[in-house]
Length: 129
View 1 (cartoon, one colour):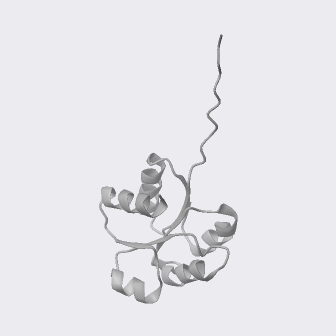
View 2 (cartoon, helix red, strand yellow; view 1 turned 135 degrees about the vertical axis):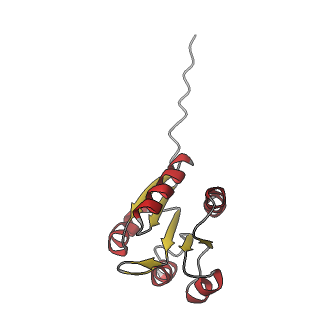
């Protein structure tokens, strides 16, 4: 007698990453993919905004300095919109301190660039899980 058990497919948690530096964006994408997240990468605010309401992310990761705006404004936008206010936001910057970021918006976490890979992954996992 053979018994088949269907284990169902576990849904991967989705992370949207907005980072204008291609190398950093690709590294983050690889790191998060290895952690078994579904990752969507964006080079600018326009492309990020286009997908935000249709993606239902578990986390958004925002760089502060962007070619078409800044992450502070976008963080406030995400946190003030009824449709996305529960989505955690992790801010990244090589140019701002955690105190400055917290004065301008209220992310769930902040990581300074350059960052340690292990620290980055641990912070993402802590915010998402």
